[in-house]
Image (tube, rainbow over all chains, first blue to last red):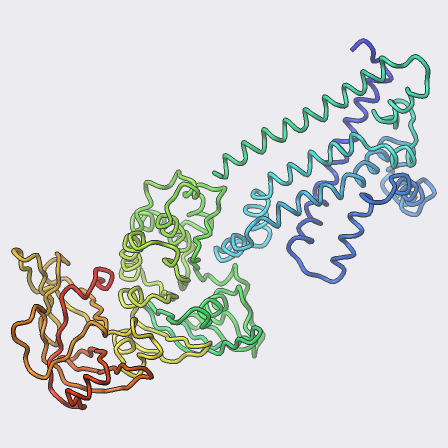
Length: 230
Length: 353
């Protein structure tokens, strides 16, 4: 990969870091929201459903703009985060991770929710009759049985986070080494003459990463299916 | 002992059941849609009654008046579901010990689970699954055990395989069992007490031998289900003819096959439709069992049939005859007649220990 210079490699590692952090941080929330939507009836359920799916249907630039307004250094949430936690998001890689997490969230929730809905609630009832608390039922029955769909959600979310462009560039711009991920690096290179080899290099890396994630998840899913005995 | 009084309304269906279940096996018997499952779901806490009170051994599980509603996980009510509901991602061993490991060794022995421990539920037969589900419920040391049609999904050989285990459970543990079923031969083999549920209400409750042989309940039980249940003892064996001789208060009965050791107690169900009545002691017939009986009751049904209650010794038998024959024979209460029971009419599924 001689075509890739230090700036391109920086973009690749940044993308991996952003996507991993985004998926890991979003996962507990995605599981929680998917569980609420799949299992519980409550006031505002439909509203929650719509809010979760909004980033999927809104133009990413709009999502990025809203993030900028809310989480920017002058935004209401951004200011609190900076003052209380010392966490700054605007024009930082952490902001890119937030944007990627928001964009990946609906895909993760959808996949996990489908998996949860396929689990027989009768098994959860059975666990309760055996004396298991709600949390134990969730941890020992619901979660393990939902693992294949959680895995699917993670892979989908990771791929989405890796490819996120519109919201990221609007929220945190594309500062090399700081917020320039693979897609914004490719876009940036396309504006410069004679950068063909570097573009091809980055595109190849993107494809390899996507395929690797898919293969890994297929392999894990098969292992799990064998364990459950189906 | 279980005390239950529950009311619950679901759409057009109204469940309003009050009864007490003593120790031993109490069968809740009724047609599908009579409210059996809702009733047991209320006991275990999976369905919340609109009103009423449920207590096991004096401990209140639910009381609408004082707003007590113990959560499912704290009720210590064992539940064996019709579909077993084993956890598919755990081995048999982990399924069994999920809720506890009370008396594990003896329960595993009693249910014959020793060879299955490392297997996964997906590889088990239906009968094996139910045995594991039973063991799993018992290892929580429940105060009471509910079984909701545990054999309904099994074919006849699997049923025959698991019934002795349930009988053993009844005889070897002191856990009261509520056994939901719509199969009268299961009820006759296992139950000590019967609660007959009809459209959400308790129609009758009482000892199994009395309820199933009551002529006036034939329309409720269904003509196939009606029949006496008697306790007998193996009195002898006719090796040449491969017959077993059973003794009960009303006389001796010959039944085909080797049914048990000398002196062993056997419970026998004699379906009402397989009992023939005769005014005189019959001669020259193939049936082996002829018992002198006294008519105690004659109840006429809606159709062409009639149910005739009979006393044989201290036991109650039941026969079903047509109105036409009852008229021709001039049957009347108090009359001394003969009941003829064909030895092969009582199938293996009607004989329990």
